[in-house]
Length: 181
Image (tube, rainbow, N blue to C red; front, side, top):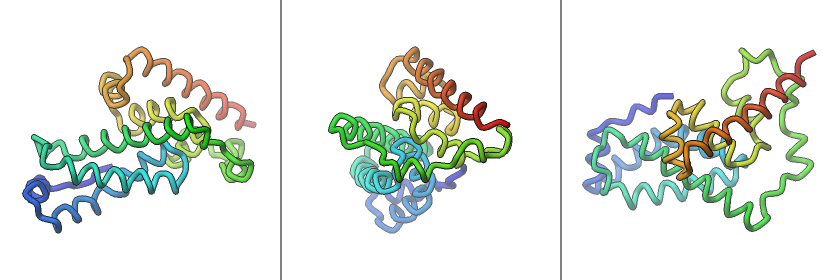
């Protein structure tokens, strides 16, 4: 997904141009929402996290040293916030999926063969994975980040990233296998 953020717009926003900042946010909003929702798993929570992310981006934008890396910097902040929110909700015991929410998740048996699964369908299959595995899978496979960068974004060792990927992939493979006739 290309976000097409102009470096000049970032420089203008860093100098306090509110219109430039609004244009940047409009450009990157969909991309960030997709990443955040893949981690948190709930639309309302993703919207809340995205609002928090925009506040952080606005507050810290002047500290960004290289405007060409705005997109990666924004994604990193968004993913960290999504992981923090998910951990907080889990720790507060507020992240329990209701039977109604589980019924809305697409049945893997009804899915097309593996090759035809779109990214959104894969994200849907990942919804009831632990947030840690969802975050690792999203960053590594959907954002194409190398393991070292995933570890940096999630602030965990590379070995932990590998184990979270292995667990998540194992569950997804099982779901896809069960979905085959």
